[in-house]
Structure formats: C-alpha cells, structure tokens
Length: 225
Image (cartoon, rainbow, N blue to C red; front, top):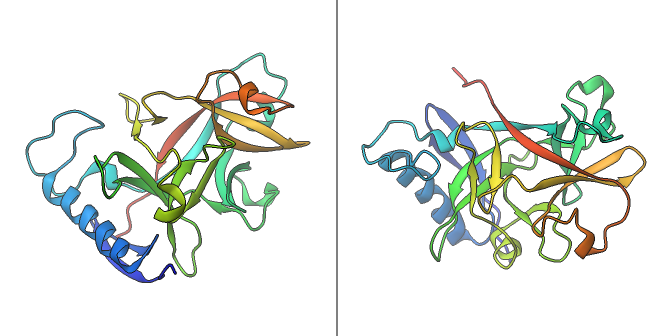
C-alpha cells in the first residue's frame, strides 16, 4: 500500500512541500534527490556544471503554457497560450484567465525537474497535483495511449518517465530529447497533452479527431519571499 506523507524540502530559497509518490522509502529518496541536486549544482540540462551552486535551476518551479506550432491548424485558437492543468489523470489545456476556465477542478501544473530514483536516474518531471494537501506526483507518458499523466513511482516506473529536460534556451520542455508533444481533442473544444513518440500524430495509437502539434513553454513561478 502506498504511504502518503508530507515533508518539507528546501528548493533554492523556497520551501516546497512534497508528498510521497510511492512508499515511505520514496519520500526519503525524493528528499535526498532534491538535497543532492542542491549540493551538487546544476547540469544545465545535460551540460557539465561541476561547481556546486546554491540553487539548482532544475529545482525552480514553473508553470506550462502551450504554444501551437502549426499556424495553419483550425484548432490553433483553441490551444495556443493555454495553460496545462492536471485533472482525472490527464494533462488538459485550459484558459490562463480563471474567469474563462472550463475545468474548475483543474490544478495548474506547478513542477520542476528531479532525478528519478533507481536505475540510471534519468532526469524526471514532477508537479503538485493539489493545493490541500500539497501532493506531488511524477509526470509521465502512458505507454498504451501516450497521453501525459501523473502518479506515484509504482504507476510511473513501467511507463515513459524520462528523460525529461529543457531546450537549449531553457524555455521549452522536452521528453526523450525532443519536443514531441501534441494536443488531442477529446471532445469539442477539450484538448489533452500527449507524447507523439512515433511522430505520426498518434495514428499508431488509433487516435482519431484533431491532433495539433504543440510546444510546452516553461514559465517560472515568482520566488516566495
């Protein structure tokens, strides 16, 4: 059985509450991973940052804003400049303005990069999934449907949980070394984020309906005083 607990881990100058994402040993692993990244400094998304730094930039919390890369898409106005929200085990697109949200239960992505425990420790991605309690989950692509989802370590380990990274400008999000993301129309006007691993607009997954190529842009959250 998964054991959920809340622990406080300093990320830069900001104390980020974390929830256990698997067993109680995972809580220790995640907190140690954050501490290790703070002590060791940043790799700069794969670059060799050898000197220790006070703040690892990978631990900076950010939101995600969607950019439509297909200017000819009839759905551009439905996906461009939307934010990513977590709800019902998918990452959906919604309006940045709360007054125009279609998902009142959606939790805006608020996450950072973290080494995945075990194995070769690929760079992973985590996000809070609620404010109260402030739970934290791994972000990963489901192997069967390739939609982005979230869960504990047990749920993520056999799916595509990394490596995540940022683009050379540190502005975009990448999975498996490229920006292979699409927005899939689930119902009229409702889109979720998927990983187009085979670069075929999810045709190999049997997905029908509108599929729009997108980039995921990192927008850093203001540091708390």
